[in-house]
Length: 492
Image (cartoon, rainbow, N blue to C red; front, side, top):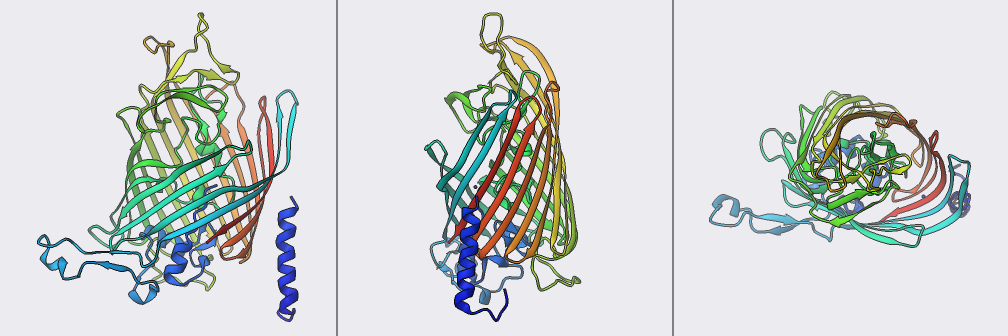
């Protein structure tokens, strides 16, 4: 806009643009205005467009919510001391001192959505939802901060309302972090609780600028009579990769550019005592423990970043531009997960529903061994960031009798999935994103799932954004789903 435009006219045009975006036509949020208050700085210090992190924001996150080379004068909200520094010298004759955040470390994200969807099944039947005002669609309550020099915390409570009028509340995150416990700074850190693991750093939905997540990776159900057939509803049962885990994780940054993480978590099953997949994207069963067997998933990721800001915020020998989202870098990594779902029962299904034995009882299935291996890459050149993941999965599936006592067959089923996404900064308030996904299920009798996702985001203010997003998911022989959603999201 021309700087000579009168301020009153400029405000009017700004408001009309917001109104046009929202009326012209709907992921967990992860922007924490808590830290904007703590450091008296803007959200765009860490985010190119929240929740997507810029290089500085990624370093801030990996450093346990501390700025690179942080000094006391950078902190505007001084912490509350819990004991004297002198107690450190006489420990264990005194309790080790610590700190609390100076103010309540709480933030709220509100998501409003105007939803248009169109679904076409294999026979050509169509269902359309016009202009469903989901006001609000989701409200997130966050708490995050540091506890002294070597501890951090993060929690998220989400209340969501569905198009059917139902609602639900979930603890999406609740974890403690222990940073730089020994060795070089940033080299050895531990997290425990419920969290999005660093296994997915950069591509799990809490770090994406788009409203839709990557369902081909996180919502594929690998369990089926002949292998998995497609994606399922969020939280509807066993999935290829768990978007969040309950576990313990170790991670660190070595020599500024090498990143590693490994962890142990509850297995990828739904955590029910008796769980069955009904074949329609839902589950039935009697709730049990979070871990329905004694096995734990094990995961690992190794990355290296060439060019740009170091993963810990180091800029020695690097000329960084004044625009903090810009750099010239390439990050590449490998990731793997292995687990065992023995004794977790699911109803055997194919694309048409449950598979019945001669007595009309459904067969049961168990995923007794599963592995996931993948490659992550992210290339940033000035205003453009192109990134993606290629994932290969293998599941050893046992087919059993309805009572689970008789083993009929054991089969290894494999699947492939990948996505490529390009994000582009037109100008600091205006952002574009395009993503393509493809999933080749384990059941070779069904066709691949193909997904296209396009997003335009207007960052009206550092903590207020409007999104217009188009998504198309198609699978030959099953049908096509399309959506055009308009979203307003505010963080405060």
